[in-house]
Amino acid sequence: MVADRFQDWKEREALAESMIPLIGQLYRNHNVVTSVFGRPVINRSVINLLKAHKFVRQIEDNGLSVRETYPVLDILSGLDLGPSRIDIGKLAVGYRSEGEGQSLKEYVTQKVASVTNGHKQKLGAGQDVVLYGFGRIGRLMARILIERAGGGSGLNLRAVVVRPGGAENDLQKRASLLRRDSVHGSFQGTISVDEENKVIYANGVAIQVIYSNSPDSIDYTQYGIQNAVIVDNTGKWRDKEGLGLHLQSNGVSRVLLTAPGKGDIKNIVYGVNHKDIQQDDQILSAASCTTNAITPVLKAIHDEFGVEHGHVETVHSYTNDQNLIDNYHKGERRGRSAALNMVITETGAAKAVAKALPELEGKLTGNAIRVPTPNVSLAILNLSLAKATTVEDLNNYIRETSLYSSLQKQVDYVTSVEAVSSDFVGSRRAGVVDGQATIVDGQRCVLYVWYDNEFGYSCQVNRILQFMSGAMYPSVP
Image (cartoon, rainbow, N blue to C red; front, side, top):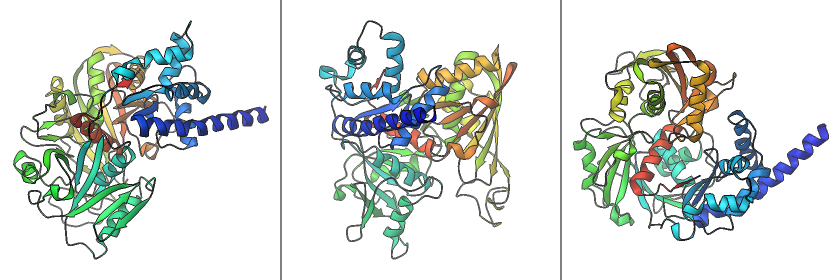
C-alpha cells in the first residue's frame, strides 16, 4: 500500500513536470493564462501545480488529478487559441458531468470555440505602465507586472519614479528591495542593474528608474514611453487637482491611485463596479485594501440575503505610516509603537463600500485595530440580513460564489480548522472567507474575511489596470 502511494505520487509528479512547458508555450506564444479553479498555474513549480489540484478536493465532492488536466492541456496546445484565460480544472471536472457521448477533444474544442480561429481577440501593442513610488505596493505591483509580461502585448512595466537624494548606491538598494522581501520572499527570477542608464532588468523586463520630486515635470517620451498609465503608489495626492499633475507630463494618458480617492474620483473595486470605468476617465482610484476585501463579500451576501445594516471591525496589520517605537505622530494613538501594541484607530472602509456598492450606503459602520503583524489582516462582518439562513447554507453559498460566480477572482473560501493569518500571505483574492468561523443566528450573521492587505490588494489594482487597458482577456469556461 505504501509503495503504491509512492508510485502514484511519482507518476503524478512526472505528469506535472510535463505540463510546465505546455503551460509556458500557451502563455508566451498565445497569451493564454491557464488556471485550476481560478488559481493561475503559469510560472509555477511541480509542487505548486500538484497543490493547486489538491485544493479542489475541499471545494468539489471529488478531487482533481493531473491525470485529468494533462490531457486537457495537451489538447489546448494543439489548438489555434487567441488571448484568453482558460481554466483547465473546470474543463476537466465539466467533462466528468457533461461530456457523455463526446470525446475529451470534442468537449474541450467545443468549450473553447469562442477563443479559437476566427474568434480570436486581436492583440494590441500593449499598454505602457509607470509606477510612481516604489514602496510596498509599488514593488509588489512590479512583481505582478513582470510575472505577467507574457508576449509583451499586455501591460508593459516601463519605469518607476522615485525621489532623488538617496545613497550613492541608490539603484542597487532599490533592486535589492525588489529582489528580497521579508514577507513575500525572494523574487522569482533574476535581477540585474545597469548603473549607467539607470535601468533595472528583471526577468528581461527593462525598468527605467526616473528620479523626480514632482509628477508634472517628467518627459516620459524621452524614454520611449507613450500614453502611459501612471500608478501612483505614494498616497501623497488623492484628489483630482493633485493627481492631475501627472497628466501634465509628456507621455501620460491616465492615472490610477492605490488609495481611496477624494471628491468625485471614482473608487473602483474590481469585480463590483469596474464596469463604471469609461474611456474618458483619466483619474481613477483603486480604493483601499480593506474596501477591496469586504465589498465583494458584502455584494455577494446582499444579492442573496439582503443586508439591512452591519458593523465592520478590521484587525489590520501595521503599516509604514506607524512608528516602530513611540514617537510623535499627527494621528491619534498611531504614535505608539506598532511592534508592541494593538492600536485602535479609524477606518473609512465601511463608508467607502457605498462608493462601489451604493445599495449599502448608510447601512455600515466600521472601526479598526492595528496589530503587531507585518501583513495579512482580518475583517469581521457583523451583519443583519433581510432573510434568515443557516451556517451550512451561507457557507455553501460563499463556496459556490468563490468557484463559479463573477466574483470568483475576488472571493475565496477556506474550511481548514488550523488556518491562521500567515497562511494567507500571497493570496491573490481580495478576501478569503473562513468557513469554520462563520456564525449564523437566523437573520444575524458574522463572517470572518482574511486578506493579504499587500499582495491581494495589488492583484486587484492589476485587474483594474488590465480592464482600463483592454488587456482583460475572455475567460473559458
